[in-house]
Length: 477
Image (spheres, rainbow, N blue to C red):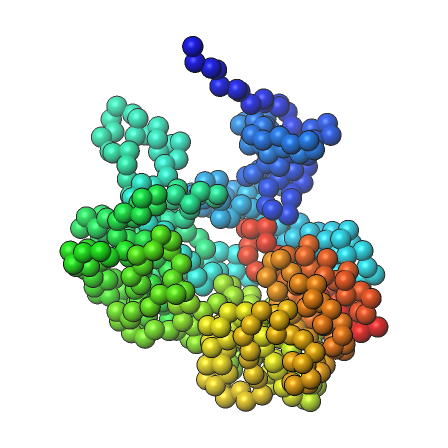
């Protein structure tokens, strides 16, 4: 006798009350906090519990009894499946309100320090087509939505269930790719390039990768667009035989012939079991191996492995806040921690005496040095290494005590050893840029013994997502 599957309970007539930092909405059922995706505050729904712990649960809405008055109509047909823009059903001004509150809550509840009035969040002027970089994955068997499955199961359909796809990974699943027809995150040229590549590959029987067995040819496509109008396209392929190489080169030639607006057409032969290519050679099929982005009178050379903020126009507003908070004088020594490719360091260099950038990734430091030379900036120097190992008393003695420290760490925030060195170095001002208000608040609490928060500016870099950047100015007590 087969065992009956355990049916998860459905809780009816639940009002969604708020949003969580990770982008899901919140409901409260008795003493239980329930996290629910793709609904908004004010919705009244029936919830199916998927996972339950002692004090919280994960659920999905199986029926919406009443729509909230505060709701927007999602503009993307892939909303609710793709998972990339979780807040499309929330009006943009409401998104900004919740992001502002996230910053306030983190600093008040976690940092628990004296705070100035937090400035209103700087919203993005572009709320669609704002990203300069997207990566699409090939798959020999794309993820099918319930509607697509129902259509395939209809008597009129003779389409196969196993279909290739080119798009985005379903959240939390490395081997499930949702085929994307249109994405509102990038300019329409990105859609045309991606869809044309897909159609050519299907027509010419170029095998898409099987993400489990790693058999197949086509792996990944990256599209970078910058405000100068230049376009970079990089395609990754697994090539084992001369026949596979011929098929792949046919695709590259097709892209070259069909899209003369591509200024940097590149490819990577990747026979590994993942799509990372930092350790692999990049080959130029046509054009140059890089593109240029501009910001004020600066030019930044961006290669296929370079990091650059993915919302170029909003990055300029973010960097402008950083420069204003830094309050630099012509003789000031500035340390830019977690400098990446040196964009902030170079952006502030003209107002300082000397800028020192430190970054873990050696390739990023090489990009920073190239961009310094490209812009004729002679007062910036860059060093590679683990921050907690590089930034020490000997390093400061060699390069001079900082008047200002700018720090833009990863989401995990700063290591305590780094915070201790900053306190020991005793700069007049610290400008802390963060993509994670919670870890920034934790670090601000550790810096509170020597510094007080004097300004906070949230910045929205990613409309329709839960993510928020925050720039905090700390001044020596």
